[in-house]
Length: 253
Ligand code: PXP
Image (cartoon, rainbow, N blue to C red; front, side, top):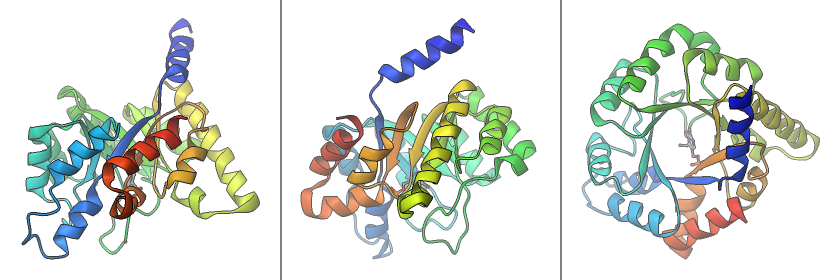
């Protein structure tokens, strides 16, 4: 009981960490099938750090449409910031993570035909598959988050499989308006309370721009936001360092 209240107190005092997802810098490079060395992803990591980010997030997709295996290796070798590796729940990805040892693995659902990660992971249906995978990652001191919809069932299943954190999919909430947006916000808050009660960290991500970063910063117990597409788009006009600074302020002012 005492331990639980201490956990809550610590979380509320902390700044919200910003994880900068640089997948779309790699997307630009892959438009020319990787024949160019630019944009330099290590420079992107340095600029994210200079702008005040705490983490770099990369998604090694099964179709390798943006981040490549060599990027994962290189970014982890240089380790300018902590690295959060997003990946599908597959044996291939697990092997890569165990070998490359990022600080965090975030398991996400993946479909080849999708434009971006659509919906959250169905942890309820994957308990038996995820449990041993998470166990192996933890043995290597890699922390694990699960990208899920803000549903109580999914949060409880995430605890059951041994996740350290849940990352709530904010994409739906971002696109809604009016009463539907309010209802989705309530779902996010309710799920965050349960995740915190179960001693998991609360992360959020998907579709966040400056405005929604400011709004999502009010999510109860939020510790971390992972943001990519808007930041890379803002960077085209403002530069990455300035965009990261502005985003961090949206989360924490
Ligand atoms: N978090 C997760 C788990 C994701 O899959 C993505 C998209 O790659 C993001 C965060 C970042 O979303 P966006 O690019 O819309 O900011």
